[in-house]
Image 1 (cartoon, rainbow, N blue to C red):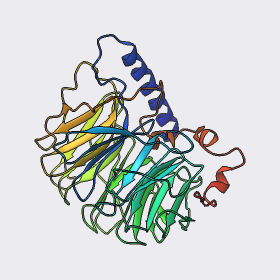
Image 2 (tube, helix red, strand yellow; image 1 turned 30 degrees about the horizontal axis):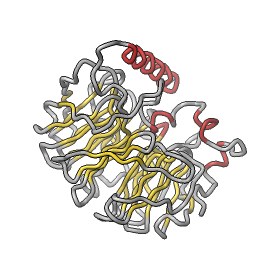
Image 3 (tube, helix red, strand yellow; image 1 turned 60 degrees about the vertical axis):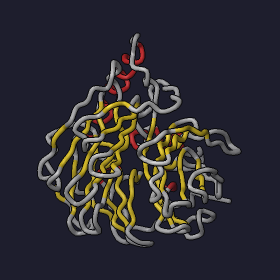
Length: 363
């Protein structure tokens, strides 16, 4: 039932978005798309877009500039980024793995992959994990060679993991479809039937996971057990960010942005609406705060900033806008849910039950 409802929601989302695109006099940011906003340890900001568009800023104060990342196989859509140090960082995307050793000024391709990857997390300059459609792989040599993450699957169908966090080289938490949460090393659990899209651990023990139909889960034992929280919403949540154990934000949306905030560890959640201009259609894929007041949220048609802790939001136009291509999913995480995604993304010789067994990278 949840799968059917999710498909209906996605169809409605596409219809509403297309109706918005057809209107005249719409907001100037119509057509902007971003999958993630991120700040590294040096305070440099990164916003990942489609068609290789990478927006960067030296700090939260800006200004933002754009570069287009290309590779031998063409220009990729960018989905996830992580910097284990101020200089070394990794980006994953549509059949793409990119690496920088100079803080994001230049990027190289250490390995190739035939798969669409959604997110990445490195615990050191050379050790990290990347996730995507039915795959989760780790590297110990800076992305040259990759091996499959080993775990016991309890779901009836293979899972696409949408977000992940690691505390050290071996202990991490991955969240994905059908409410699957994998605490490595170990078995996966399913505290909810809803797809999970985002995870945030402000401390080693306290963590939060969010997903479709207003799902918010909390753990206080490092991800061993999870309890649902009452969000008071049926929105599809795409991302969560906590600055500390009590102060956090959740974003997503159906046909317009959804932004929720808690200051008491998730005991209560408050929704905040903003003035988003004359083009109200779209949703949010990612949120991050650099301090208790300064935050950013990005997605379809929106690049938003706040300076009062998320109570009010304003648009922050990127230096150049990418083109919206019809029924683009709200994020890679959204596209992974679609039943026909496997046929679109995997080589024809790869079956769903084989996908996890394949090493997804090659030199």
